[in-house]
Length: 610
View 1 (cartoon, rainbow, N blue to C red):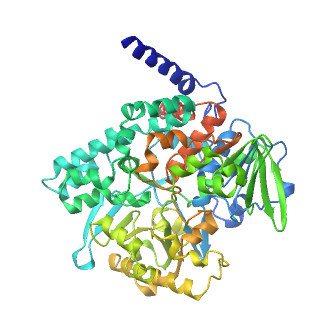
View 2: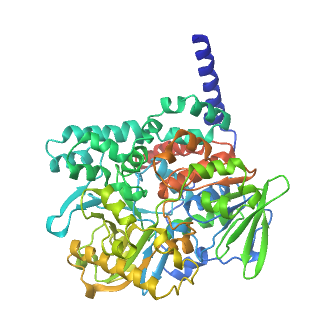
Protein backbone atom coordinates (compact mmCIF):
# COMPACT_ATOMS: atom_id res chain seq x y z
CA UNK A 1 0.00 0.00 0.00
CA UNK A 2 2.71 2.46 1.00
CA UNK A 3 4.69 1.61 -2.11
CA UNK A 4 1.70 2.60 -4.27
CA UNK A 5 1.32 5.89 -2.38
CA UNK A 6 5.03 6.67 -2.83
CA UNK A 7 4.86 5.89 -6.55
CA UNK A 8 1.80 8.15 -7.00
CA UNK A 9 3.45 10.99 -5.06
CA UNK A 10 6.68 10.62 -7.07
CA UNK A 11 4.76 10.67 -10.35
CA UNK A 12 2.79 13.73 -9.20
CA UNK A 13 6.01 15.53 -8.24
CA UNK A 14 7.54 14.71 -11.63
CA UNK A 15 4.50 16.09 -13.46
CA UNK A 16 4.50 19.24 -11.36
CA UNK A 17 8.17 19.83 -12.05
CA UNK A 18 7.80 19.24 -15.78
CA UNK A 19 4.69 21.33 -16.36
CA UNK A 20 4.83 23.97 -13.64
CA UNK A 21 8.43 24.66 -12.63
CA UNK A 22 10.24 23.70 -15.83
CA UNK A 23 9.80 26.60 -18.28
CA UNK A 24 11.07 25.94 -21.82
CA UNK A 25 9.16 28.72 -23.65
CA UNK A 26 10.16 32.36 -24.22
CA UNK A 27 9.96 34.62 -21.17
CA UNK A 28 8.30 38.07 -21.51
CA UNK A 29 9.69 38.93 -18.06
CA UNK A 30 13.25 38.05 -18.99
CA UNK A 31 14.48 41.63 -18.66
CA UNK A 32 13.35 44.73 -16.82
CA UNK A 33 11.79 47.03 -19.45
CA UNK A 34 10.99 49.99 -17.23
CA UNK A 35 12.01 53.22 -18.93
CA UNK A 36 12.50 56.71 -17.46
CA UNK A 37 9.13 58.27 -16.69
CA UNK A 38 7.76 60.51 -19.44
CA UNK A 39 5.53 63.55 -18.80
CA UNK A 40 1.83 62.85 -18.45
CA UNK A 41 -0.06 63.41 -21.72
CA UNK A 42 -3.23 65.36 -20.94
CA UNK A 43 -4.32 66.43 -24.42
CA UNK A 44 -7.16 64.16 -25.49
CA UNK A 45 -6.31 64.56 -29.16
CA UNK A 46 -2.89 63.03 -28.56
CA UNK A 47 -4.23 60.20 -26.42
CA UNK A 48 -6.96 59.42 -28.93
CA UNK A 49 -4.32 58.80 -31.60
CA UNK A 50 -3.42 55.72 -29.54
CA UNK A 51 -6.78 54.76 -28.04
CA UNK A 52 -9.10 55.37 -31.01
CA UNK A 53 -7.43 53.85 -34.05
CA UNK A 54 -10.33 52.82 -36.25
CA UNK A 55 -10.39 49.49 -38.06
CA UNK A 56 -9.57 49.41 -41.76
CA UNK A 57 -8.46 46.43 -43.81
CA UNK A 58 -5.36 48.41 -44.77
CA UNK A 59 -4.33 48.69 -41.12
CA UNK A 60 -4.21 44.93 -40.51
CA UNK A 61 -0.56 43.92 -39.97
CA UNK A 62 0.87 41.20 -42.18
CA UNK A 63 1.93 37.76 -40.95
CA UNK A 64 -0.03 37.87 -37.71
CA UNK A 65 0.83 35.45 -34.93
CA UNK A 66 -2.43 35.96 -33.02
CA UNK A 67 -5.74 37.82 -32.96
CA UNK A 68 -7.22 38.99 -29.67
CA UNK A 69 -10.94 39.71 -29.43
CA UNK A 70 -11.55 42.53 -26.93
CA UNK A 71 -9.22 45.23 -25.59
CA UNK A 72 -10.03 45.00 -21.89
CA UNK A 73 -7.13 44.30 -19.54
CA UNK A 74 -7.46 40.54 -20.15
CA UNK A 75 -7.06 41.05 -23.89
CA UNK A 76 -4.44 43.79 -23.82
CA UNK A 77 -2.56 41.95 -21.09
CA UNK A 78 -2.04 38.78 -23.12
CA UNK A 79 -1.33 40.84 -26.27
CA UNK A 80 1.50 42.68 -24.50
CA UNK A 81 2.89 39.44 -23.08
CA UNK A 82 3.06 37.96 -26.58
CA UNK A 83 4.44 41.17 -28.05
CA UNK A 84 7.26 41.12 -25.52
CA UNK A 85 8.50 37.83 -26.97
CA UNK A 86 8.28 39.11 -30.54
CA UNK A 87 4.77 38.01 -31.52
CA UNK A 88 2.75 40.12 -33.93
CA UNK A 89 -0.71 40.53 -32.39
CA UNK A 90 -3.88 42.23 -33.63
CA UNK A 91 -6.35 43.33 -30.93
CA UNK A 92 -9.89 44.02 -32.15
CA UNK A 93 -12.32 46.14 -30.10
CA UNK A 94 -15.99 46.64 -30.96
CA UNK A 95 -16.25 49.96 -29.04
CA UNK A 96 -14.91 53.25 -30.41
CA UNK A 97 -12.00 53.32 -27.94
CA UNK A 98 -9.66 50.74 -26.46
CA UNK A 99 -9.57 49.67 -22.83
CA UNK A 100 -12.75 47.74 -22.08
CA UNK A 101 -13.68 48.52 -18.47
CA UNK A 102 -10.49 50.60 -18.27
CA UNK A 103 -11.77 53.18 -20.75
CA UNK A 104 -12.98 56.67 -19.86
CA UNK A 105 -15.49 58.98 -21.51
CA UNK A 106 -16.16 62.71 -21.33
CA UNK A 107 -19.51 64.49 -21.10
CA UNK A 108 -19.96 68.25 -20.60
CA UNK A 109 -16.35 68.64 -19.63
CA UNK A 110 -16.40 65.82 -17.05
CA UNK A 111 -14.22 62.74 -17.47
CA UNK A 112 -15.66 59.50 -16.06
CA UNK A 113 -14.08 56.11 -15.57
CA UNK A 114 -16.33 53.10 -16.01
CA UNK A 115 -14.66 50.29 -14.10
CA UNK A 116 -11.43 51.26 -12.33
CA UNK A 117 -12.31 52.49 -8.86
CA UNK A 118 -9.46 51.15 -6.76
CA UNK A 119 -6.77 48.49 -7.16
CA UNK A 120 -5.04 46.65 -4.33
CA UNK A 121 -1.74 44.77 -3.87
CA UNK A 122 0.39 47.44 -5.57
CA UNK A 123 3.27 47.76 -3.13
CA UNK A 124 6.61 48.36 -4.85
CA UNK A 125 8.46 45.21 -5.95
CA UNK A 126 5.57 42.88 -5.30
CA UNK A 127 4.80 40.51 -8.22
CA UNK A 128 1.53 42.20 -9.22
CA UNK A 129 3.11 45.67 -9.25
CA UNK A 130 6.16 44.34 -11.08
CA UNK A 131 3.95 42.74 -13.71
CA UNK A 132 2.05 46.00 -14.31
CA UNK A 133 5.30 47.95 -14.49
CA UNK A 134 6.57 45.60 -17.20
CA UNK A 135 3.30 45.65 -19.15
CA UNK A 136 3.49 49.46 -19.32
CA UNK A 137 7.29 49.85 -19.43
CA UNK A 138 7.14 51.67 -16.11
CA UNK A 139 4.98 54.52 -17.44
CA UNK A 140 1.83 53.81 -15.43
CA UNK A 141 1.94 55.53 -12.06
CA UNK A 142 -0.29 54.89 -9.03
CA UNK A 143 -1.57 57.15 -6.27
CA UNK A 144 -2.45 55.56 -2.91
CA UNK A 145 -5.93 56.20 -1.52
CA UNK A 146 -6.49 57.58 1.94
CA UNK A 147 -6.38 55.24 4.90
CA UNK A 148 -9.15 54.35 5.73
CA UNK A 149 -9.76 53.59 2.05
CA UNK A 150 -13.36 52.37 2.50
CA UNK A 151 -16.17 53.72 4.67
CA UNK A 152 -19.04 51.32 5.39
CA UNK A 153 -22.33 53.07 6.19
CA UNK A 154 -25.15 51.00 7.71
CA UNK A 155 -28.72 52.02 8.45
CA UNK A 156 -31.27 54.72 7.56
CA UNK A 157 -30.52 58.46 7.94
CA UNK A 158 -31.82 58.59 11.51
CA UNK A 159 -29.72 55.63 12.66
CA UNK A 160 -26.59 55.58 10.53
CA UNK A 161 -23.42 53.88 11.72
CA UNK A 162 -20.18 54.50 9.82
CA UNK A 163 -17.26 52.10 10.09
CA UNK A 164 -13.89 53.02 8.54
CA UNK A 165 -11.96 50.19 6.87
CA UNK A 166 -8.20 50.52 7.15
CA UNK A 167 -5.48 48.80 5.17
CA UNK A 168 -2.62 47.11 6.98
CA UNK A 169 -2.47 43.47 8.04
CA UNK A 170 -2.49 44.50 11.68
CA UNK A 171 -4.28 47.81 11.47
CA UNK A 172 -7.36 46.41 9.69
CA UNK A 173 -8.27 44.05 12.57
CA UNK A 174 -7.00 46.40 15.28
CA UNK A 175 -9.29 49.21 14.15
CA UNK A 176 -12.28 46.84 13.96
CA UNK A 177 -11.66 45.80 17.54
CA UNK A 178 -12.03 49.45 18.64
CA UNK A 179 -15.55 49.52 17.23
CA UNK A 180 -16.51 46.06 18.44
CA UNK A 181 -15.15 45.51 21.96
CA UNK A 182 -15.69 41.95 23.13
CA UNK A 183 -15.50 40.62 19.56
CA UNK A 184 -11.72 40.28 19.45
CA UNK A 185 -11.81 36.49 19.09
CA UNK A 186 -14.27 36.67 16.18
CA UNK A 187 -12.16 39.28 14.39
CA UNK A 188 -8.96 37.29 14.87
CA UNK A 189 -10.60 34.10 13.60
CA UNK A 190 -12.00 35.95 10.58
CA UNK A 191 -8.52 37.21 9.74
CA UNK A 192 -7.06 33.73 10.15
CA UNK A 193 -9.62 32.25 7.80
CA UNK A 194 -9.18 35.03 5.26
CA UNK A 195 -5.39 35.03 5.19
CA UNK A 196 -4.32 31.47 5.94
CA UNK A 197 -7.14 29.23 4.83
CA UNK A 198 -8.22 30.92 1.64
CA UNK A 199 -6.49 34.12 0.54
CA UNK A 200 -2.98 32.66 0.47
CA UNK A 201 -3.97 29.54 -1.43
CA UNK A 202 -4.97 31.11 -4.74
CA UNK A 203 -1.86 29.60 -6.34
CA UNK A 204 -3.57 26.19 -6.49
CA UNK A 205 -6.41 27.63 -8.57
CA UNK A 206 -3.84 28.69 -11.15
CA UNK A 207 -2.07 25.36 -10.90
CA UNK A 208 -5.16 23.43 -11.98
CA UNK A 209 -5.34 25.58 -15.12
CA UNK A 210 -1.66 25.08 -16.04
CA UNK A 211 -1.09 21.37 -15.59
CA UNK A 212 -2.22 18.85 -18.25
CA UNK A 213 -5.93 18.03 -18.24
CA UNK A 214 -5.45 14.35 -17.27
CA UNK A 215 -3.44 15.35 -14.20
CA UNK A 216 -5.94 18.09 -13.30
CA UNK A 217 -8.78 15.56 -13.55
CA UNK A 218 -6.84 13.11 -11.41
CA UNK A 219 -6.41 15.73 -8.67
CA UNK A 220 -10.09 16.65 -8.85
CA UNK A 221 -11.70 13.22 -8.97
CA UNK A 222 -9.44 11.66 -6.33
CA UNK A 223 -10.25 14.54 -3.98
CA UNK A 224 -6.58 15.50 -3.77
CA UNK A 225 -7.32 19.04 -5.03
CA UNK A 226 -9.50 19.72 -2.00
CA UNK A 227 -7.04 18.04 0.34
CA UNK A 228 -4.06 19.95 -1.00
CA UNK A 229 -5.73 23.36 -1.11
CA UNK A 230 -7.56 25.20 1.65
CA UNK A 231 -8.88 27.48 -1.10
CA UNK A 232 -11.00 24.71 -2.59
CA UNK A 233 -11.86 23.32 0.82
CA UNK A 234 -13.44 26.64 1.79
CA UNK A 235 -14.81 27.49 -1.67
CA UNK A 236 -18.12 25.69 -1.18
CA UNK A 237 -18.90 27.59 2.01
CA UNK A 238 -20.81 30.86 1.67
CA UNK A 239 -19.75 34.14 3.26
CA UNK A 240 -22.95 34.24 5.32
CA UNK A 241 -22.40 30.72 6.60
CA UNK A 242 -18.86 31.45 7.74
CA UNK A 243 -19.38 34.88 9.32
CA UNK A 244 -22.56 33.85 11.12
CA UNK A 245 -20.55 31.16 12.90
CA UNK A 246 -18.05 33.76 14.08
CA UNK A 247 -20.32 36.33 15.74
CA UNK A 248 -23.90 37.22 16.60
CA UNK A 249 -23.24 40.95 16.23
CA UNK A 250 -25.17 41.97 13.11
CA UNK A 251 -23.11 45.06 12.33
CA UNK A 252 -19.87 43.08 12.58
CA UNK A 253 -21.34 40.42 10.29
CA UNK A 254 -22.05 43.19 7.81
CA UNK A 255 -18.51 44.57 8.07
CA UNK A 256 -17.07 41.10 7.49
CA UNK A 257 -19.27 40.79 4.37
CA UNK A 258 -19.47 44.33 2.93
CA UNK A 259 -16.99 43.91 0.06
CA UNK A 260 -19.25 41.42 -1.76
CA UNK A 261 -20.12 44.25 -4.14
CA UNK A 262 -16.67 43.97 -5.73
CA UNK A 263 -17.52 40.57 -7.21
CA UNK A 264 -21.31 40.70 -7.45
CA UNK A 265 -22.84 37.98 -5.26
CA UNK A 266 -24.97 38.29 -2.15
CA UNK A 267 -23.10 36.95 0.90
CA UNK A 268 -25.36 33.91 1.13
CA UNK A 269 -24.45 32.94 -2.45
CA UNK A 270 -20.82 34.05 -2.43
CA UNK A 271 -17.87 31.71 -2.05
CA UNK A 272 -15.90 32.51 1.08
CA UNK A 273 -12.69 31.74 -0.82
CA UNK A 274 -13.50 34.37 -3.45
CA UNK A 275 -14.44 36.81 -0.70
CA UNK A 276 -11.12 36.15 1.02
CA UNK A 277 -9.23 37.01 -2.15
CA UNK A 278 -10.84 40.45 -2.21
CA UNK A 279 -10.18 41.12 1.47
CA UNK A 280 -6.53 40.09 1.07
CA UNK A 281 -6.21 42.15 -2.12
CA UNK A 282 -6.68 45.37 -0.14
CA UNK A 283 -4.87 44.46 3.07
CA UNK A 284 -1.72 46.26 1.91
CA UNK A 285 -3.59 49.29 0.60
CA UNK A 286 -5.58 50.66 -2.34
CA UNK A 287 -4.43 52.73 -5.33
CA UNK A 288 -5.76 54.69 -8.31
CA UNK A 289 -3.99 55.28 -11.67
CA UNK A 290 -2.56 58.78 -11.95
CA UNK A 291 -4.11 60.50 -14.95
CA UNK A 292 -7.19 58.28 -14.92
CA UNK A 293 -8.08 54.77 -16.02
CA UNK A 294 -7.37 55.43 -19.71
CA UNK A 295 -3.66 55.62 -18.85
CA UNK A 296 -3.63 51.81 -18.58
CA UNK A 297 -4.44 51.07 -22.22
CA UNK A 298 -2.57 54.18 -23.38
CA UNK A 299 0.75 52.78 -22.12
CA UNK A 300 0.13 49.16 -23.17
CA UNK A 301 -0.83 49.69 -26.80
CA UNK A 302 2.58 51.06 -27.95
CA UNK A 303 4.24 47.81 -26.80
CA UNK A 304 1.91 45.81 -29.06
CA UNK A 305 2.61 48.20 -31.93
CA UNK A 306 6.39 48.10 -31.46
CA UNK A 307 6.32 44.33 -32.08
CA UNK A 308 4.47 44.87 -35.37
CA UNK A 309 0.92 44.46 -34.04
CA UNK A 310 -2.03 46.82 -33.75
CA UNK A 311 -5.02 47.66 -31.55
CA UNK A 312 -7.98 48.68 -33.70
CA UNK A 313 -11.41 49.88 -32.55
CA UNK A 314 -14.85 49.93 -34.17
CA UNK A 315 -14.03 46.36 -35.16
CA UNK A 316 -16.95 44.13 -34.12
CA UNK A 317 -16.06 40.46 -34.51
CA UNK A 318 -19.18 38.55 -35.56
CA UNK A 319 -17.67 35.06 -35.73
CA UNK A 320 -14.52 33.04 -35.33
CA UNK A 321 -13.32 31.23 -38.46
CA UNK A 322 -12.46 27.51 -38.42
CA UNK A 323 -11.08 25.07 -40.95
CA UNK A 324 -12.44 21.57 -41.60
CA UNK A 325 -10.35 20.20 -38.72
CA UNK A 326 -12.13 22.49 -36.22
CA UNK A 327 -9.03 24.62 -35.82
CA UNK A 328 -9.39 28.38 -35.31
CA UNK A 329 -7.82 30.21 -38.26
CA UNK A 330 -9.05 33.79 -37.82
CA UNK A 331 -12.09 36.01 -37.33
CA UNK A 332 -14.71 37.83 -39.33
CA UNK A 333 -15.10 41.59 -38.75
CA UNK A 334 -18.12 43.61 -39.80
CA UNK A 335 -17.18 46.92 -41.46
CA UNK A 336 -20.33 48.69 -42.60
CA UNK A 337 -22.09 46.20 -44.88
CA UNK A 338 -18.85 44.33 -45.59
CA UNK A 339 -17.54 41.21 -43.85
CA UNK A 340 -13.75 41.17 -43.68
CA UNK A 341 -11.87 37.97 -42.85
CA UNK A 342 -8.67 38.33 -40.85
CA UNK A 343 -6.47 35.25 -40.55
CA UNK A 344 -3.98 34.17 -37.90
CA UNK A 345 -2.78 30.83 -36.53
CA UNK A 346 -4.24 31.63 -33.10
CA UNK A 347 -7.37 33.37 -31.78
CA UNK A 348 -7.64 34.56 -28.17
CA UNK A 349 -11.01 35.71 -26.86
CA UNK A 350 -11.43 38.27 -24.12
CA UNK A 351 -15.15 38.51 -24.93
CA UNK A 352 -16.16 36.23 -22.04
CA UNK A 353 -17.07 32.57 -22.10
CA UNK A 354 -20.75 33.15 -23.00
CA UNK A 355 -20.11 35.53 -25.89
CA UNK A 356 -17.29 33.36 -27.19
CA UNK A 357 -19.11 30.03 -27.10
CA UNK A 358 -22.70 31.16 -27.75
CA UNK A 359 -22.22 34.05 -30.19
CA UNK A 360 -18.92 33.58 -32.02
CA UNK A 361 -18.85 29.84 -32.71
CA UNK A 362 -20.70 28.06 -35.53
CA UNK A 363 -23.80 26.21 -34.28
CA UNK A 364 -22.25 22.78 -34.81
CA UNK A 365 -19.25 23.68 -32.64
CA UNK A 366 -21.44 25.25 -29.95
CA UNK A 367 -23.15 21.86 -29.63
CA UNK A 368 -19.92 19.99 -28.82
CA UNK A 369 -20.28 18.17 -25.45
CA UNK A 370 -17.04 19.69 -24.16
CA UNK A 371 -18.28 23.21 -24.93
CA UNK A 372 -21.69 22.53 -23.37
CA UNK A 373 -20.04 21.09 -20.27
CA UNK A 374 -18.12 24.31 -19.67
CA UNK A 375 -21.20 26.45 -20.27
CA UNK A 376 -23.15 24.27 -17.84
CA UNK A 377 -20.59 24.98 -15.12
CA UNK A 378 -20.92 28.77 -15.43
CA UNK A 379 -23.78 31.25 -15.34
CA UNK A 380 -24.10 34.95 -16.03
CA UNK A 381 -23.12 37.29 -13.24
CA UNK A 382 -25.29 40.02 -11.75
CA UNK A 383 -26.18 43.05 -13.85
CA UNK A 384 -24.68 46.38 -12.88
CA UNK A 385 -26.10 49.90 -12.91
CA UNK A 386 -23.78 52.91 -12.86
CA UNK A 387 -24.60 56.56 -12.35
CA UNK A 388 -22.13 59.23 -13.41
CA UNK A 389 -22.35 62.50 -11.54
CA UNK A 390 -20.63 65.72 -12.65
CA UNK A 391 -20.37 68.34 -9.90
CA UNK A 392 -19.42 72.01 -9.71
CA UNK A 393 -16.80 72.72 -7.05
CA UNK A 394 -13.48 71.42 -5.76
CA UNK A 395 -13.17 68.27 -3.67
CA UNK A 396 -12.81 70.48 -0.58
CA UNK A 397 -15.99 72.37 -1.49
CA UNK A 398 -17.89 69.09 -1.83
CA UNK A 399 -16.39 67.19 1.10
CA UNK A 400 -14.83 64.50 -1.09
CA UNK A 401 -11.75 62.47 -0.22
CA UNK A 402 -9.64 59.77 -1.81
CA UNK A 403 -11.75 56.96 -0.41
CA UNK A 404 -14.91 54.98 -1.21
CA UNK A 405 -18.26 54.67 0.52
CA UNK A 406 -20.31 51.48 0.74
CA UNK A 407 -23.81 52.56 1.77
CA UNK A 408 -26.35 49.96 2.97
CA UNK A 409 -29.87 50.69 4.17
CA UNK A 410 -29.29 48.17 7.00
CA UNK A 411 -27.03 45.33 8.10
CA UNK A 412 -29.22 42.45 6.80
CA UNK A 413 -27.55 42.47 3.39
CA UNK A 414 -28.85 39.17 1.99
CA UNK A 415 -32.46 40.03 2.70
CA UNK A 416 -32.11 43.59 1.39
CA UNK A 417 -30.51 42.66 -1.93
CA UNK A 418 -32.76 39.66 -2.54
CA UNK A 419 -35.92 41.70 -1.94
CA UNK A 420 -34.63 44.48 -4.18
CA UNK A 421 -33.75 42.17 -7.11
CA UNK A 422 -37.05 40.28 -6.87
CA UNK A 423 -39.12 43.45 -6.65
CA UNK A 424 -41.05 45.48 -9.18
CA UNK A 425 -38.50 47.52 -11.13
CA UNK A 426 -40.09 50.93 -10.46
CA UNK A 427 -40.46 50.21 -6.75
CA UNK A 428 -36.94 48.77 -6.46
CA UNK A 429 -35.57 51.84 -8.24
CA UNK A 430 -36.99 54.03 -5.45
CA UNK A 431 -35.17 52.14 -2.70
CA UNK A 432 -31.71 50.91 -3.69
CA UNK A 433 -30.32 48.93 -0.72
CA UNK A 434 -26.61 48.98 -1.58
CA UNK A 435 -24.63 51.77 -3.21
CA UNK A 436 -20.93 52.12 -3.95
CA UNK A 437 -19.71 55.73 -4.13
CA UNK A 438 -16.29 56.73 -5.42
CA UNK A 439 -14.77 60.01 -6.58
CA UNK A 440 -12.15 59.56 -9.32
CA UNK A 441 -11.49 63.31 -9.23
CA UNK A 442 -10.59 63.18 -5.52
CA UNK A 443 -8.22 60.22 -6.04
CA UNK A 444 -6.24 61.55 -9.00
CA UNK A 445 -3.61 64.19 -8.04
CA UNK A 446 -3.60 65.51 -11.63
CA UNK A 447 -7.36 66.12 -11.71
CA UNK A 448 -7.45 69.71 -10.45
CA UNK A 449 -4.92 70.76 -13.08
CA UNK A 450 -6.86 69.01 -15.86
CA UNK A 451 -10.38 69.95 -14.73
CA UNK A 452 -10.26 72.88 -12.31
CA UNK A 453 -13.41 73.56 -10.31
CA UNK A 454 -15.09 70.30 -11.31
CA UNK A 455 -15.52 66.93 -9.58
CA UNK A 456 -17.03 63.57 -10.44
CA UNK A 457 -18.70 60.74 -8.60
CA UNK A 458 -19.08 57.16 -9.84
CA UNK A 459 -22.05 55.38 -8.27
CA UNK A 460 -22.58 51.64 -8.73
CA UNK A 461 -25.27 49.19 -7.66
CA UNK A 462 -26.96 45.99 -8.84
CA UNK A 463 -29.78 45.88 -11.39
CA UNK A 464 -31.59 43.09 -13.19
CA UNK A 465 -30.95 42.84 -16.91
CA UNK A 466 -34.63 41.88 -17.30
CA UNK A 467 -35.73 45.27 -15.94
CA UNK A 468 -34.30 46.89 -19.08
CA UNK A 469 -34.34 44.02 -21.59
CA UNK A 470 -37.34 45.30 -23.57
CA UNK A 471 -35.21 48.21 -24.84
CA UNK A 472 -32.09 46.22 -25.71
CA UNK A 473 -32.62 46.42 -29.48
CA UNK A 474 -33.37 50.14 -29.55
CA UNK A 475 -30.82 52.70 -30.65
CA UNK A 476 -28.52 53.37 -27.71
CA UNK A 477 -29.05 57.16 -27.86
CA UNK A 478 -32.84 56.91 -28.27
CA UNK A 479 -34.41 54.13 -26.24
CA UNK A 480 -37.70 55.81 -25.62
CA UNK A 481 -39.50 57.79 -22.93
CA UNK A 482 -40.29 54.84 -20.64
CA UNK A 483 -36.62 53.86 -20.52
CA UNK A 484 -35.56 57.40 -19.68
CA UNK A 485 -38.22 57.63 -16.97
CA UNK A 486 -37.04 54.40 -15.34
CA UNK A 487 -33.45 55.63 -15.36
CA UNK A 488 -34.61 58.92 -13.86
CA UNK A 489 -36.25 57.12 -10.93
CA UNK A 490 -32.93 55.42 -10.18
CA UNK A 491 -31.02 58.69 -10.55
CA UNK A 492 -33.37 60.61 -8.24
CA UNK A 493 -33.47 58.04 -5.47
CA UNK A 494 -29.71 57.42 -5.56
CA UNK A 495 -28.96 61.14 -5.60
CA UNK A 496 -31.05 61.53 -2.43
CA UNK A 497 -28.87 58.89 -0.72
CA UNK A 498 -25.68 60.62 -1.86
CA UNK A 499 -26.82 64.03 -0.62
CA UNK A 500 -27.80 62.59 2.76
CA UNK A 501 -24.32 61.08 3.25
CA UNK A 502 -22.41 63.99 1.70
CA UNK A 503 -24.18 67.12 2.99
CA UNK A 504 -21.98 69.50 0.96
CA UNK A 505 -23.35 67.99 -2.25
CA UNK A 506 -26.61 69.75 -3.11
CA UNK A 507 -28.78 69.72 -6.21
CA UNK A 508 -27.47 73.08 -7.38
CA UNK A 509 -23.99 71.52 -7.52
CA UNK A 510 -25.13 68.82 -9.95
CA UNK A 511 -24.15 69.84 -13.48
CA UNK A 512 -24.44 66.42 -15.12
CA UNK A 513 -26.10 63.11 -14.24
CA UNK A 514 -26.53 60.00 -16.39
CA UNK A 515 -27.23 56.34 -15.74
CA UNK A 516 -25.68 53.34 -17.46
CA UNK A 517 -27.94 50.29 -17.22
CA UNK A 518 -27.21 46.61 -17.86
CA UNK A 519 -28.12 47.06 -21.53
CA UNK A 520 -25.69 50.01 -21.65
CA UNK A 521 -23.02 47.58 -20.46
CA UNK A 522 -23.99 45.19 -23.23
CA UNK A 523 -23.62 47.90 -25.86
CA UNK A 524 -20.33 49.42 -24.72
CA UNK A 525 -18.37 46.59 -23.08
CA UNK A 526 -20.04 43.57 -24.69
CA UNK A 527 -21.43 42.15 -21.43
CA UNK A 528 -23.91 39.51 -22.60
CA UNK A 529 -26.37 40.11 -19.73
CA UNK A 530 -25.15 43.48 -18.53
CA UNK A 531 -22.79 41.99 -15.97
CA UNK A 532 -19.68 43.89 -14.93
CA UNK A 533 -17.80 40.98 -13.35
CA UNK A 534 -18.11 38.36 -16.07
CA UNK A 535 -19.45 34.93 -15.13
CA UNK A 536 -21.10 34.47 -11.74
CA UNK A 537 -18.74 34.22 -8.74
CA UNK A 538 -20.93 32.01 -6.52
CA UNK A 539 -19.82 28.85 -4.77
CA UNK A 540 -20.23 26.64 -7.86
CA UNK A 541 -17.71 28.75 -9.81
CA UNK A 542 -14.95 27.81 -7.37
CA UNK A 543 -15.25 24.06 -7.29
CA UNK A 544 -12.05 22.25 -8.17
CA UNK A 545 -13.78 20.60 -11.14
CA UNK A 546 -14.94 23.90 -12.63
CA UNK A 547 -11.50 25.47 -12.30
CA UNK A 548 -9.79 22.45 -13.83
CA UNK A 549 -12.25 22.41 -16.75
CA UNK A 550 -12.54 26.11 -17.64
CA UNK A 551 -9.02 27.03 -18.62
CA UNK A 552 -7.30 29.10 -21.32
CA UNK A 553 -7.17 26.17 -23.75
CA UNK A 554 -10.63 25.55 -25.19
CA UNK A 555 -11.86 22.26 -26.69
CA UNK A 556 -11.11 23.80 -30.11
CA UNK A 557 -7.52 23.87 -31.29
CA UNK A 558 -5.86 27.30 -31.53
CA UNK A 559 -8.73 29.02 -29.68
CA UNK A 560 -7.92 30.39 -26.22
CA UNK A 561 -9.80 32.27 -23.50
CA UNK A 562 -8.37 35.12 -21.43
CA UNK A 563 -9.64 37.60 -18.83
CA UNK A 564 -12.09 37.41 -15.93
CA UNK A 565 -13.79 34.16 -16.88
CA UNK A 566 -10.48 32.28 -16.95
CA UNK A 567 -9.45 33.30 -13.43
CA UNK A 568 -11.54 35.67 -11.28
CA UNK A 569 -13.19 39.07 -11.69
CA UNK A 570 -11.87 42.58 -11.50
CA UNK A 571 -8.74 44.24 -12.87
CA UNK A 572 -6.31 41.98 -11.02
CA UNK A 573 -8.36 38.86 -11.75
CA UNK A 574 -8.60 39.62 -15.48
CA UNK A 575 -4.87 40.29 -15.61
CA UNK A 576 -4.24 36.98 -13.84
CA UNK A 577 -6.39 35.41 -16.55
CA UNK A 578 -4.12 37.00 -19.16
CA UNK A 579 -1.05 35.69 -17.38
CA UNK A 580 -2.54 32.19 -17.24
CA UNK A 581 -3.48 32.37 -20.92
CA UNK A 582 0.02 33.57 -21.82
CA UNK A 583 1.48 30.69 -19.80
CA UNK A 584 -0.58 28.17 -21.78
CA UNK A 585 0.40 29.69 -25.15
CA UNK A 586 4.11 30.14 -24.41
CA UNK A 587 4.47 26.83 -22.54
CA UNK A 588 5.90 28.68 -19.58
CA UNK A 589 4.76 29.52 -16.05
CA UNK A 590 4.61 33.31 -16.29
CA UNK A 591 3.34 33.62 -12.73
CA UNK A 592 6.69 32.32 -11.49
CA UNK A 593 8.54 34.52 -13.98
CA UNK A 594 6.79 37.63 -12.64
CA UNK A 595 7.74 36.62 -9.09
CA UNK A 596 11.37 36.08 -10.13
CA UNK A 597 11.59 39.46 -11.86
CA UNK A 598 10.02 41.20 -8.85
CA UNK A 599 12.80 39.82 -6.65
CA UNK A 600 15.44 40.81 -9.20
CA UNK A 601 14.20 44.40 -9.61
CA UNK A 602 14.00 44.80 -5.84
CA UNK A 603 17.67 43.84 -5.49
CA UNK A 604 18.69 46.19 -8.32
CA UNK A 605 16.63 49.13 -7.04
CA UNK A 606 17.91 48.61 -3.50
CA UNK A 607 21.52 48.77 -4.74
CA UNK A 608 20.76 51.99 -6.64
CA UNK A 609 19.39 53.61 -3.48
CA UNK A 610 22.55 52.69 -1.60
